[in-house]
Length: 148
Image 1 (cartoon, rainbow, N blue to C red):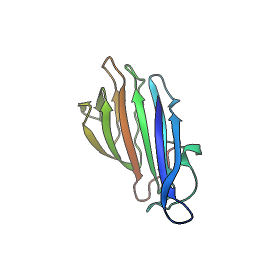
Image 2: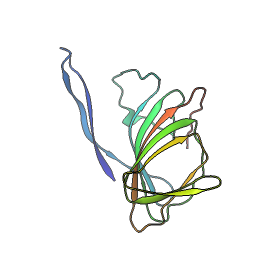
Image 3: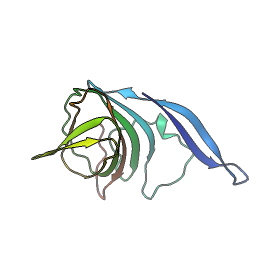
């Protein structure tokens, strides 16, 4: 999966401009999983900098920061139960997926929106096509970075 990323900024005259226009290549993870880290911040509220977070080694979340990524879950993706110290805003862009929680699961399809609030969960793709989800993970107060 490749994603075109356009990042704006300001030139020396304070006029808006395109700072970066490039492709972000997704990185594989466990079987049936790949992720494209699009943007991140190390602080909340966010501070503008000249750094390109696409060059950072990102874990799942950043303590006192935020992460924006696209994830592709292939059919039969390997399990990964986990909890992060974040509030996650997620939008299913394509395909379908099942979100498993400790005592229930819910079927999601393109257009569905999830607000996940530091809960234990797993994603299961029982469909025949890949599912792509956009995630914005925002650190909770006192939350820890997760490196996996």
